[in-house]
Length: 210
Image (cartoon, rainbow, N blue to C red; front, top):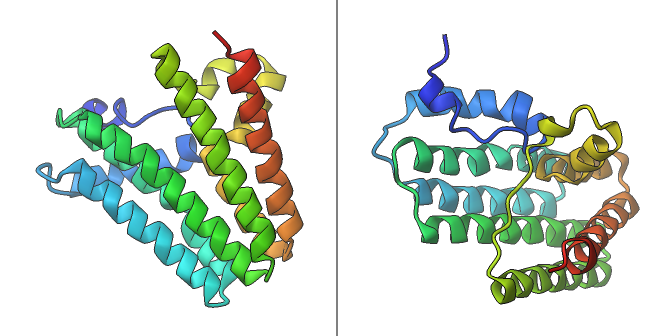
């Protein structure tokens, strides 16, 4: 029987793989580790893990590196869960969590650009991603708003919205990277991330405008 105190503090509905696979892994790990651990340490370990995935990709093992990166979300779910369970939440922790998510993604995308020998094109994508994040951050700062991630399972009865949420979540991004690696298709990865961040930019500027 699951410990409800732990399980309910592992964020739900962040993505289908997150919800049905990684939450179970995170629950098992939290049951085993020392409760005194600082969640920020987990966050920093996740950065090392993402950079290790990127190095594996650059070394020529693109499928292995992409598969490694698929499990980055285990760390991403775990640090927040530990912070909530053991009352170790902090503004700094929330800040570096989001920052390291971004840095990890950029490192892996950059490594893919190096692997596919189209670094210039991927650098343009990275600049576009950073621009989108900058616009989003500025908007939140100006309007003093806080982004709340929707639990996608709440929209299960709205198949179109549910589908859109599913294919734009963090876990699906990593799945696209793995699929692109398996198919040896940088075009798939590049197209997906360009469309994803274009949707994010439009949502930030128009749909979610204040």
